[in-house]
Amino acid sequence: MAHKSRPDSGFTCIVCSFKVSQSAWGTRHRNHCPHCLWSRHLDDEPGDRRCPCREPMEPIAIEVRKDGEWSIVHRCTGCGTLRTNRIAGDDHELALLALALKPIATPAFPLGDIGRR
Image (cartoon, rainbow, N blue to C red; front, side):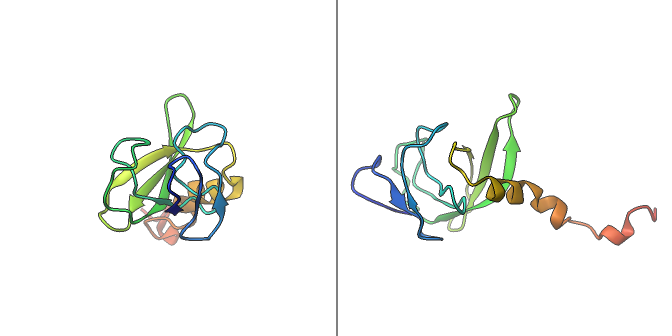
């Protein structure tokens, strides 16, 4: 996501080119695209924009917190760092559901073996 000069001015997603507004319900430090859910490794601490990596971060999973709130788990394609980022009010619901269902759609074991043991 190519960020403009001000960290709160919004950005264009480097994966899908969606124009992302920095303001969204449910988040103070928007750093992922609400359309494709990809992010960019920009922060050492939330909102500081000081990380030198700057590589894309792939959405790999959904985390459900104790209070039921969902977060997106991102893995940096450059350095492998894992980060969680709470979802925002304008995140695409179908993209979130597809990410949450990904382990069911592509299990780590052959489905044909279920019940054979």
